[in-house]
Amino acid sequence: MPDKKQDLIDQHLQDLNDDGVDRRGFLKCMAWAGTGLVWTMSGGVPVSRAFAKSGGKGSDKDAGKGADFSFVQISDSHIGFNKPANPDVTATLQTAINKINAMPHTPDFIIHTGDLSQLSKPSEFDTLDQVLKGASAKDIYFVPGEHDMLSDNGEQYLQRYGKGTKGTGWSSFDHKGVHFVGLVNVANLKAGGMGSLGHEQLEWLEDDLKGRSASTPIVLYAHIPLWTIYPDWGWGTDDSEQALSYVKRFGSVTVLNGHIHQIMQKVEGKVSFHTAMSTAFPQPAPGTAPSAGPMKVPADQLQKVLGITDVNYMVSGRSLAVVDSPLGA
Amino acid sequence: MNNTKNMWVAALTAPVMIALLLLCIGSQNVMASNDKASVATADVKIDNFSFGPQTITVPVGTTVTWTNRDDIPHTSVSADDVFKSKVMDTDEKFSYTFTKPGTYPYYCTIHPKMTGKVVVQ
Image (tube, rainbow over all chains, first blue to last red):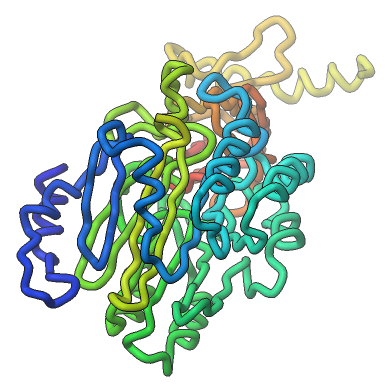
């Protein structure tokens, strides 16, 4: 598996900023990012360091330095989950929010990439709202995960978090020159398939991006990865290729996903793919367990495999720096 | 339950029961209750994001019960809209009685890579 993946990365490897620096060797180590690492993508240059050696709190501080604005991605809070992998997911979400509130730079907004709840229950959404209310950033954008659309076709979710969105909850907005698009790939899934965007949403996306300057930085976010990570576990989106064909002409594209409860990164041309940690429980690396089910780790290790993602945007380089931080070191 | 009705059910299902016993000797998945001779049942367990057994063959009239033994919710939904479970959380069950012969493909709508088949003979 790593070899195949590596080939893919090598094949598509390009210098992101056209500054002639060869990053082949550098990117090679990005293929499968382990937990407990801090990934920085500064001016298009990815840097990885072991979190434990990066100077703890100091590294968070440095991450936002010089940024024109930042936002935070949180994912997979699974409020309502109460199994051994994490009996108190509300507490770990609270820890994530505390971590955001303690940042030296207040993020402009938060993006939640889905699986807000475990079972789409009103009480679970209530608890989530209660915790998110305490966040320093007041604007929160959501896309649903499959857990948020159980039994009622996402009606409850859309009522609460889908205001102003289209279809099953997709939308776009502009912020300080960056165009953000939230996509839904968890609705109307077909037997035997993976995530799916569907014809209607793809048409909307094409239209949404039409006429925008190729120099506009684009951020796509969705729950299930928009690149195929592990088809056996459904970790991919069947029609993502078409969506990605619409962003090919843009100079900087960042794709943020959740669903797999671990950090993975890939760079393909001008497109950087990134998945976030969960705030609830970790899942195994692809193929390392009989299934993708919640992974139980010793209680004192849990906060190392849960976390948040801080994204900093610098106008000068038209690039985004993505920094993952575990909840606890 | 009234007794007259039970008798009727027993009389009607007797040939089915015989067929069932002949068909399913050696199968662990289908258990017919000899004593009451009224209901044929079969079980599908959901473990590690998969239906086990993935294909189950049962006689007409069998009630199939799915049990979710994962820490994650699943569904069991017919690909042809024949049956549709509610979301099954851990240890929750869903049952459906198959009254017509045929092949019934189904999947988990939450994790569509999970597919299975009920063959009713």
